[in-house]
Image (cartoon, rainbow, N blue to C red; front, side, top):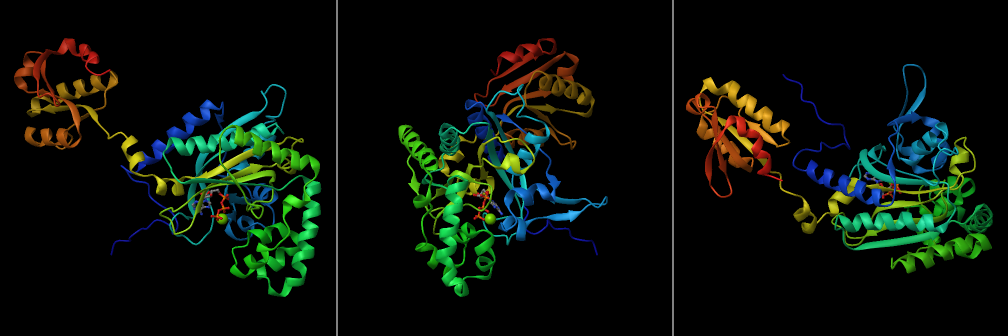
Length: 426
Ligand code: ATP
Ligand code: MG
């Protein structure tokens, strides 16, 4: 019996024509980011395990449960990247992008696969894709706001509707230390009732308890002290500026003081963009998440350089594309289909196809020795704008027939005039 192979659980094949939607999303992301003066960065898909464990934090879900890690043949502890920021920061430090020869802030974006060992379901895969951005070197609230505005712009460009921006602040170190203690004081009396995860996190990282998906934990979270009451003046000012600037740009937001985000490295502004009534479920789904991470560059061995960025889930975004988006996807059209009649014209059609492609036209031909009728049918199926036909008589006269499939007009053109076709399609 033949072995049947299947893709690994939690992965997907992205097949044509669906891959057009991916290209559409990626193209719009590139175009939007270019308007904000971001450049692309490409980092390895695997890194040393420590790059992720140091940055995401030892108590994060990503590090404790979701990492695809292994020892390679040289005994190095490697992990497939679960998110984009850590690798970009590692590259930023290793390549000294903080140096004087680089214009500040350094603004980069990436797109590519990420890997997390999670229970697969709609909008949740083990290999999934993120589009993300990072900006290094500015503490200005303007930078936070620009990042948020850019994400919103991009999502609007691909016509996602029902967007909801939720923001919060985690403050600076002093705010957080104060808040941390207040949270511990509040949660400790409920210790026995907390989930095992939250028990474990209570002293290591109490903020993480706020992020618990456990229903019972969430009851305590509802009445927990709010970070907003523990902010230092500096942290409060930063947050106020972010809010003012969002308002100045007409970007609506909601403050959710219990939002903490899954990764340890954030401080000051954090945000999520959710979509209401998504087809993914009854409630809301988060498609984009990010924030400021002023300590992360140092954490990964670099100087004190602030950063801010976001990551956006491509699969979740694609599930939200609607009819309006579909209309924006151009239906694929071929410029030319070249029909050959009889074996003798093989080389002739081959040369014409080659020439048309050199001229920049999407051109197709028959590869299956099919009869002219079947070739015309292919041309139709492929939505060709023009069909070129060459039989023995045309070949001998050094001409070819050209049919405009829109109008039905047909004309005979001298082979040596083929270059004039460049005016047919602009
Ligand atoms: P969640 O709470 O849904 O697990 P998260 O906090 O782990 O999300 P982030 O690490 O902030 O997610 O990643 C940013 C975005 O990447 C998410 O908003 C989501 O759109 C997407 N994403 C995260 N994990 C997955 C996954 N396993 N499959 C598909 N998309 C994902
Ligand atoms: Mg997660």
